[in-house]
Image (cartoon, rainbow, N blue to C red; front, top):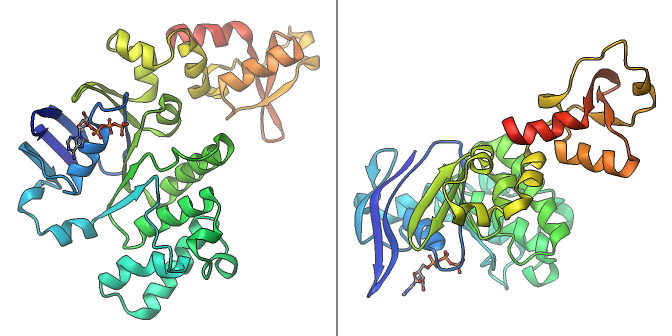
Length: 316
Ligand SMILES: Nc1ncnc2c1ncn2[C@@H]1O[C@H](COP(=O)(O)OP(=O)(O)OP(=O)(O)O)[C@@H](O)[C@H]1O
């Protein structure tokens, strides 16, 4: 668990982070979001002591980080950034093996780890291990950056706008990969972005910051349902909020059981149980219909009328 109690950071006269309290549980994917200059990156970098905090208490598993050996602390924390920070004259495998080598792992274990991570990040070893960073696309370089951050098997992974420079399609595919990886490795992730859609998609907890303060900490659904103030509501996209919320809720949560007196259902298009209400809405608009049949794999399990989607956005 990472805990911040009244943590403050001053750069001269600038109060970058203003007495924040924050608790990030083990296995959480916590996303810090807010407008430029609100203190997100500073907060992130205080966690691995790249920036020392000016005052307050910042603990990892109950230990105040300013009391810990700096090297030991960094071993427990992976760090991935937008520009990847890969060494340009080293091939991919050597870039990834840097931290395990610094940790003194035996050579065979380091080689095994590099293979394992390339596989985890969907980069075939034979194709990528010997390439140089200049021979990679932006998305591939970013995957290598994430692999490198995970190499020493840290408990915590800090990510500072890691997908910020990528085109929307690559970005979305890397977001999906991150969610898949997190389901597998279950680390504590702290992720910085200024993109609320990215935050809503990835986070188990969202921390909204403004002018060095935390304005709200909540799950994506709680945030969409109860934004703390107008600033948060604006960040959530004003009237687009309903659609964003429909993107988070699953068909399974709003469908109804099949009823025998619904003959028009036979003609209705099919959606899967795990799809989002936003996908359902989009399908209804496309097919100009008011209900969908809901399938789980090959089996019909229920139906979803339009009014259940509209109600979902009021009462979810
Ligand atoms: N090394 C530094 N020296 C002086 N001021 C700094 C330093 N680093 C950050 N600041 C200031 O602290 C404040 C918070 O910066 P920070 O980088 O944490 O914001 P951010 O929310 O991550 O912004 P962005 O999304 O633009 O990266 C800003 O006013 C910034 O100018």
